[in-house]
Structures are given as structure tokens and as C-alpha cells.
Length: 269
Image 1 (cartoon, rainbow, N blue to C red):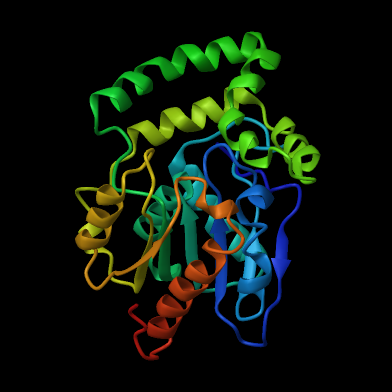
Image 2: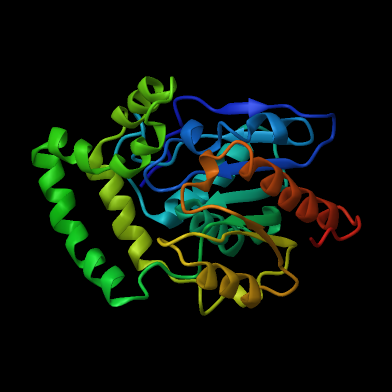
């Protein structure tokens, strides 16, 4: 599928010459929903770029995760970024792994958050994957019903928050069928056979209370990548919304990767 550029790219220039982070959001979030608590902390030390994947917002039909990985490099090309640190959350972590696999010469490092080598491991996950095609078809026929399902868990995080109307508006921009097609692609993803070949500095941010991507699966990802550092954060799969706990750990992980990628000193917590 031909590349269609995102409607907008959020870019924080950071200090002159700072390493470039390309932020890759998770399955049901928008780019801003996933990363807004962390923009300020990251932007003080890094050049930060975020945008939305295919099928999100007004970006049209979804592609595969491989398409999304190629998009990350296409966005970098458009902004004149030669080498990037791919920072991915959940599905974005799978995309980040594919960015390295498909474009290794462009990747300075990886920061993989709340993610794993596969997302179809348990019988429950395999059963859910088998129903995604039906759910996507139903959402095409009745988008309003689909919207009540897709993002329902995420929007509950904003109960009582003045940000809830904004969060709802962000989610309304997505077509639920497109999100479910992304979920189908994620269910097919597995890096188990090749992720051990990752040869760039890597940090794995482990959400220690996660039930969607269990912490032991996240740690297994780190163990599979030579030299990967582990950065635990006390939270579940929605830890990215915790503005007190998540940004400092993410910043620590990015520093560790960028420091090693530029020949600096390892920073292993």
C-alpha cells in the first residue's frame, strides 16, 4: 500500500544535535493520548517526533505492522533524520522491532515499552485473535457500536478528569474497524526467531502490574536482546498515562539507549 503521510507530525526540536526519538503509539491510543504526559520530559533532552499510524485519525485504511515500520522511516526521511531511536509502546513496540529488522542502518537504538515478542501466546489471546476479523467486519457495518468497544478501557482512565472530553475527541477520530484490523496484524506478529539479532542499544520498560502483556513476557523480550537494559515502572498497561511514574522511567530508558548509541556510558538502573 502506498505511503500516505500523517495529517500532522508533532515535533519538539530539543537541544541542538540531540538524538531523535520517533515515538510509536499503542493499539487504541492516538499519538497524543499515548505520549502527552512524556512530551515535556523527553523534549528537554531529545528531538522528539510523534505521529499516528495508518488507519488512525484521518490516515485512511490501515496497513500491516510492516507498513507502519516503513512509515517511521518515511517520516524520518521527510524531516531529514538520518538515524533514529525507535520508541514504541505495546503495538508500537512491535513496530519498533520491525523498524530495526527492515531498516537496521537507520536505527540508533530501541526503547520498547509494555511489549513483547508475540501477542498471541495464551489460549485466551489465540481465541481473541480468531474473532478479530468478525469484529472488524461488524464495526464497518456499525461504526457507532464499534466505537463503544474500541477504546472503552482507555477512556475509563479519564473518569473525573478535565481531560476526558479531549480524550473522547481523540478516540472519535479513529475508525474502529481500522483499529481492529491493526489488532489482527498485531496478533500475527512474532519476533521470536529474529529479535536476538538486534545489535543496537536497547532498553525495555517493563510495566510491572500489566495483565495484557505480562511482565514476565516483557522481561523475556529483554533477555532475548543482547545487552538490553530493563527499566521497571509500577503500573499496568495504561501506565503511560501516569504523569508522575512513567515519564521519569521512559526518560531514563531513552538516556541509556542514546548514551550507548553515541558512545557514552551505560546507564543500567
